[in-house]
Amino acid sequence: MLSRSFLLIALLMIGTLLVACGGDDGIGDRMFSNESDPASVDPGMDEPAVDHDVMDSAEDAGAESPAWQIQASSIDRRVIRSGDLELFVTDVPAAVRQARDLVTDRGGFLASSTSRTLSDDDERADLSFEVPSDVFETVMNDLRNIAYVVRVGHETTSSQDVTEEYVDLTSQLANLSATEARFVELLEEADTISEILSVENEISRIRGEIERIQGRVNYLEQRTDFSRIYVSFQPEPDDSVTVAGRHFTPGESARAAWDASMQFVGSIGNAIIVIAVFFWWGWPVLAVLGVLLIRYQRRRRAEKTVA
Image (cartoon, rainbow, N blue to C red; front, side, top):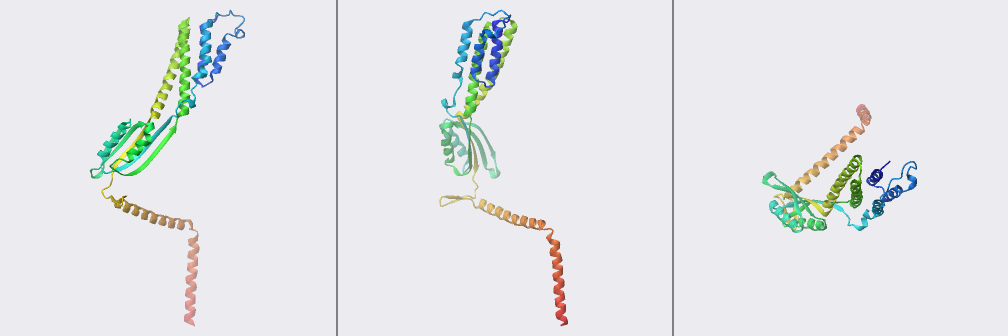
């Protein structure tokens, strides 16, 4: 004769698989309601005694399961934002100090930093800041306007909406936590060693899933609560000048003009090579025509001389 606890364990194991696969909770309600259906009991077996209080509580928990589902409309959007700035400054160490101070004032912090010495003893610094997402644009603007900044080399921003993933994970987490609570209740009512081991194995498996999902949820919360900004401070070349409020670098302009001219010459050379190779079949024809033209001119000169 099957014991009541063993029957509950079997049903809950099936229910757990459905929860892990993202099935709706109405299936779990039907599973528990079928448990007390006389048609589902083998007539040749003695009907086991059922603790209706325990079953009612399990059914109540299953009936409340739709409340576990967290809708996207009930929470704020979860967006991962990041920015990248390349700033040319007159004083790298002073610019780094000012950047750290303004980020700290906005509630952020320095996540990592590296610095290295370039040619002519110039120093370059690369920093990574974590700032509250609600002040991301403000901090980006503050960094661009640091007193030592001469110009912005490049600037990029990106965003990734993870609201759907976050809602799905929190829903799975709530379902698994409720299922774990059911198994803990069954563990207290287990009668045999095999039943105890089966329930404990399920509890261990569910807790592993909970820890995995909780880790991902924690990561998404941290990455959406704080945005990441990468800043590169580089020294401005000494040949730079400012005329009428505009920034000029004669050395860089000359190098850019030389590179452009060489690229133009190279393009012409490539075009000539392409044409010469593509029309290879025309060279023999041109050679024959050239020979005929030379003979014709010689014959004409000979005729004129005789005349």
